[in-house]
Image 1: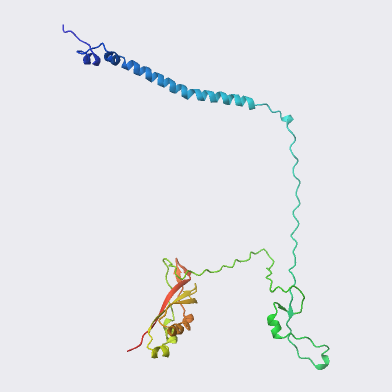
Image 2: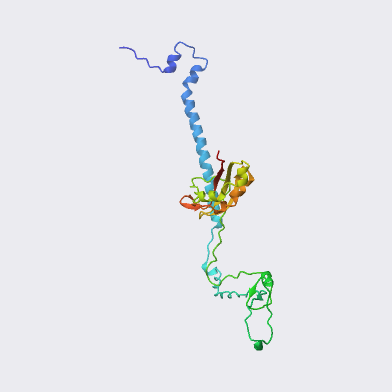
Length: 267
């Protein structure tokens, strides 16, 4: 019968080598030391995880025991009395507005001489123009000009919205520019000044016009002029221009638009 030889890897490695100098023993005890080290590390990890929890649990239980006590409802104080109904505040006192000094404006009526008892004083027109307030009779009071007294009622006073002018140099994105409706008529009114024609002056005058939401002229600025004579002729009639309003997002907006006026001599 064949002989069966059982040998592990260490036996095979050290079959023809020296086994008395420690290497063989270290390899043989490697797994045992590995398992011992793993067990020690696991034990340390478990103790580090469990001990703080046990310590905190004990401290919380002691704290709970310290603050817990029994309450007898009979020892509680009586609840505070209910607040009595507070009377509503008195209505606001309406202070009448201060009286203003007024000057009476009366139109003299013709009367027979016999019926005139005392001549009435007629205020001259110059005095009325200088007076801050004009009424039906003379009245003494504060000379402070007009006072705007709002009407009584519950309605809100409408807020006055002042339309802001766009910047003359700003670029308005996605807007349809206003178009002049009577540019040809205005050019005929401007014409060609005889002085400029005789002097041989020709060129272009460009006017930047601010058109409001209703397509009306509001103001202008000359941004290019070849000569003051031609610019003056344009400025005298540019306020008569009419436009279609500029539109952005379906709503009319104020818009600055350039309008050129060309002056060219015929050969």
